[in-house]
Image (cartoon, rainbow, N blue to C red; front, side, top):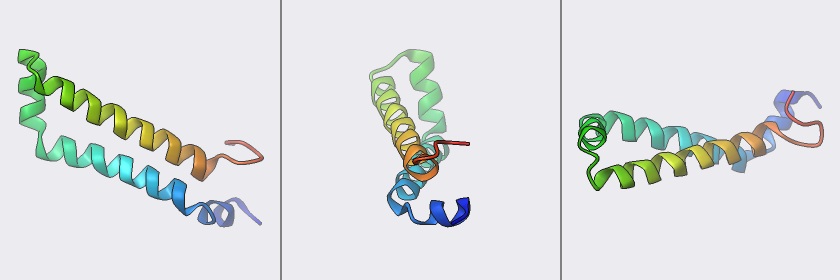
Amino acid sequence: MDQKQARNKRPLGKLLFITGVGLLLVLLLSRAEAIILAIKKAAEAADTVAAVVVLACVLIFIGAVLTYGGDEGIS
């Protein structure tokens, strides 16, 4: 079984990876101005933005490990 077939057998990892990337993209596209204002003013919204970014990064990491990791490791 080659690497591509092995990756296709891990749908949960792919789903989490795509969800995390999508969450970051949606956040950046829809709230770019709000993010800039929150960073500039250090408003309360910055906590929410930081939490969403951390959540998205965690989902991306878990998805990548589940998708590309395995017995042989990431190579």
